[in-house]
Amino acid sequence: MNELFTIAGHFVDPKTIEDITPLGNGLINDTYKILVQGQPRYVLQRINNAVFTDVEMLQNNIEAVTHHIRKKYESQGVNDIGRRVLHFLKADTGKTYVIEDGKYWRVMDFIADSYTYEAVTPEYAYYAGRSFGDFESLLTDLESPIGEIIPDFHNIEFRMKQLDEAIVEDKAGRMKDPEVQDYVAKIKAVTERMCLGERLYREGKLPKRICHCDTKVNNMLFDKDGNVLCVIDLDTVMPSFVFSDFGDFLRSAANTGAEDDPDLDHIHFNMEIFKAFAKGYLEGTQSFLLPIEKENLPYAATLFPYMQAVRFFADYINGDTYYKIKYPEHNMVRTRAQWKLFEEAEKNLEMMKLVVDK
Ligand code: GN1
Ligand code: MG
Image (cartoon, rainbow, N blue to C red; front, top):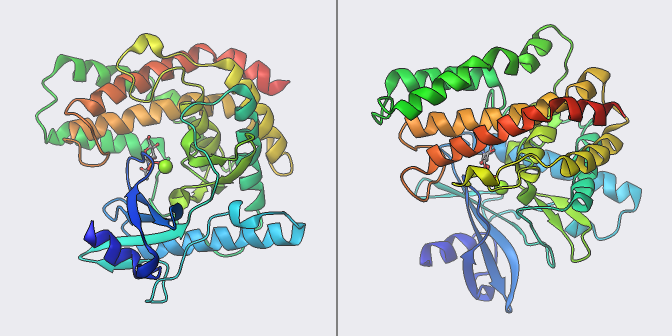
């Protein structure tokens, strides 16, 4: 605990800090809120530098994105900008992060009276679609270069290669399990079809744009009336296919169960959420979205549960070195749940195409 106070003291006057308590449930970084005068005032975060190995690039990316959005909002006369875009504090080192005992830390302003959700109604999904679409749209004319912070992050061909390596190395001795072998077979049977995006890219038909790349429902802040305040968790902002933001939101929002639901009967693909989100997203992106991007949005909704199953599964085979887990089989439970969601999404593929066409 003392360690947290010392670190926070690099960014904030230590005498004003009353308490520092855990916040949120991300699978990668550790997040806390800093309380001042009985209220959360700042967010302290330990950056997982095993995942984000180039923290300098990470913070440069985030600063470029937040400055760009803030400037646009200023010129548009948007109200309450402090609650509409993240703001990172400079430490006494002059940078927006500090290193203590080999650990990396940063602090941002806490956005007051904001709420996150793990599940949304169609109405909120519509606002979320609009906001993620607007987010991409705001960044189409960003001039500062944005580095690919995790190379090949949403490249399914690369994720399959990682899975193959995990299988060969079998570090945790989990390959002998018949269920594991069964999942390997199921995953591989459809790989070819799931790599469509990468093929279109190689053929020069599909562009990369600056995307958020972690559009889980809980990475968006709402106010008490359900209006979207802002998009958070900007670590993975990087060039990617628009499929990333569209598909990853639905992976969490259209799932009627939890990401790691042990009861597969809970997991279905909610078409009402799809319709509402797609409507908002298409409105937000209408100024730039190409037909090839639009017509493949339904594919994106199937790709992301698939890719997430592959990633959780590879981590399980590797012995759980990437995602935080709560119990030993957690990554296998997540794999089953994401695979079920993938199957459910595929059942709705034709219906999704009809919706997007309309
Ligand atoms: C991670 O940090 P968090 O929980 O927002 C992961 C995402 C996964 C997600 C699965 C950098 O996001 O890509 O989709 O878990 N982030 C990274 O819940 O790998
Ligand atoms: Mg997050």
